[in-house]
Image (cartoon, rainbow, N blue to C red; front, top):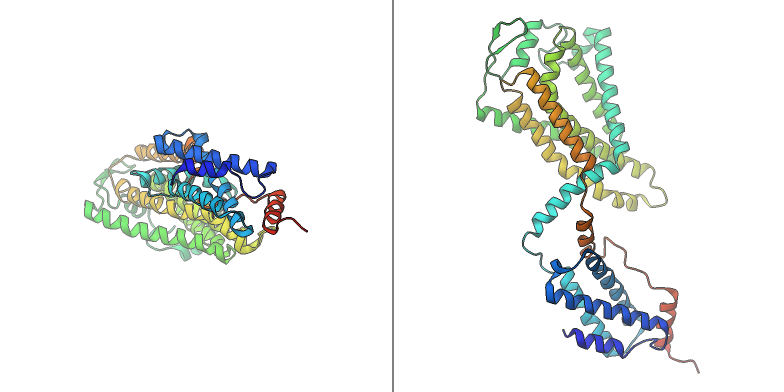
Length: 389
């Protein structure tokens, strides 16, 4: 289209041209036409952040004006000129993605995930507290009644096992390694293929638990609470079993390298499940459907990024846990993992410049179209009906 022609049509006026309202509309249309000419000259990359944000705002306002003119009446030429202007702006904003756009969207989403995590921190803290309460319950319950702990036993790791048997379970899959008695106890060494298969099994198992905890939020969060308490109790029973045999140092060196990432992923998905439950139970002034719709962006972002987190945890559990890394090295590995997650989730954010550039390309469904003022509606009605006799 010819932007100059659109500008010329704007200057000739339209509905309510004799009012300040129409002049303001035409000034907005001219600003949009100027922005589109700038895009034609230098592309979107050449615009400043403010110009990009203004482009989206001007497009949405012009689209609103076009709807008004089509609904309430205006000259055919003015409608056609404004329609071409809005169509041209739509093509610029929602046109075919440029090369590398998919990668930019991925990195933007990667940086937006920590912001969603921080936004729901109260729910994550609640999930972590429930997991901790389950751990204490399992530890104290086992200490008071070791027979009770057998209800959680899935293998030979029970309080009635010997110290040597428990130590064997910690060394299983590793190359030969010294025990605390300075003797050599060989583990059952696994090759890379075995470890890869083991990682796949672990990922499937952990993801099943975490996803159940997430979707249980739609059941008012009650299953989410039970899943957290149950898994915390299981961890507490195992912790007591190794602690009472003097293997606390070895146990936590065995569990923490993968446990930091694995338990964090479970807590994040469970926290998102509790967030969903809260939106159902207490939607506020919105309907439950509208409240859930508003919550879905943050909740689904948790679901999407928890999968790679649990995959990383499974790979660590399979390859690092079954390695010859010393217990001290395992603690350093766990500390480094915790520090990296804390830095990423605590400080990761989408740069302001990126947000400004995305403002121009957000869909009308994601951002409400500016409503016309009462004066604009009255002016449009008056133009359609004409002067009263």
